[in-house]
Image 1 (cartoon, helix red, strand yellow):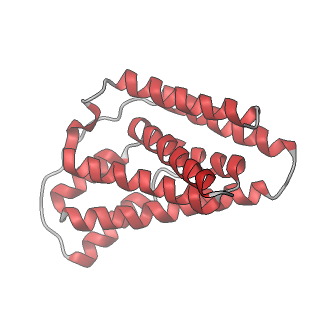
Image 2 (cartoon, rainbow, N blue to C red):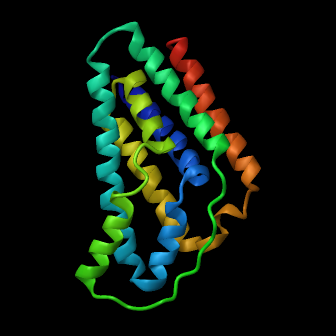
Length: 193
């Protein structure tokens, strides 16, 4: 794959995962809630490690399916994008719960934060989009890098902006944008562009 192709795949992974995660993910609230209890650097580090590991799992799953080498992999990839679009469209905004602030030790905080992110929300629209992009592009590292960077961006935005991240754009606008992006990627997969 050329440098331009790798960059494009990384950019596609970044966009599709970021927009999917902004709409259909509850970790935004977990990030801000945990930041009330532990240092933001610890929360972001735990989130980053968990996110990188979860995206690596999604990318590797996509690469296993990719080795089948049949026209069905394109159909599975397109279906994954369309499923992501549907999941995003149907996602209800989570209830906002406030947690009391407190303090915790470094190791306890890392364990709590890592577990909160790594053990939850498997098979979410962002992971499905990353696996589908691997099926389309066959670029494991570029997809993983773009998807992980998208999650880290989301995490940093959530910590920096707190609860206001979803107030910049109405939920309906984000939902439409994310669903349309996944549908476009699904159509591009079907036509094998």
